[in-house]
Image (cartoon, rainbow, N blue to C red; front, side, top):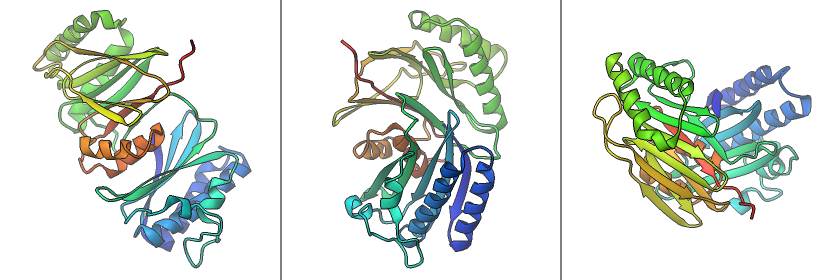
Length: 323
């Protein structure tokens, strides 16, 4: 999942520009009904930002050719979500008077809300296409015009690699690109994880590239096998219990150690998250207490985190196991 459009909404002029720009972007990409609904939703959500959130941001995200629309603010939060989506509730004197209720009644998108009035103050309202139902997603903060950075996620068959090269900018980006290509072109097995990481470690040193922290995840229908070195955060939520794990210390390419290995059995009640150091642990804990939705967790974590980093996050939602 990636951010393709991002708008700061601080006044009515910003909202009007966002509507026009979104319409131009979607022209020829989606059918009229789809485009018209997103345009309507943008105006209603943007009006809420101005009235209740003191302004905020609207993001258009893309996943497998589908678009998600998010409205994000760091305002006081919503005290009563049931009231906010109730029929007849209006957000603003000059609005269409339909608000969140009408948005929630559409046939194409699910409406999902994260809000907090306490430790984290603010709200994320997310529209997710009903056709987008999967058991994982990933998101790296998209700086739009900035093409370099150290965080990365790449998929190869049943394996995912999440990593963070040391530092920032061009040097970190060069290392990240090398590691991604190395992972994609070489055969892989978690049974030989230490051999893989050691060979990669030597390749990075020989090329005088930046080192980094890494995790490889093998995905099956019943479990995740997570193998890695260094400061990649691992979080598991099963029902209401939230657990945090730590990988072995070290930096592949600099100070190398043996890989940690975790086997996590998961089902439809389980969420497993891997994240780089741009996502704050306490923030993620607070968000997880309120939602199991993978898209909402990803977007809220990236938006609310105060750590200025690339903010890579990879989330798995367990599926019901067949017996």
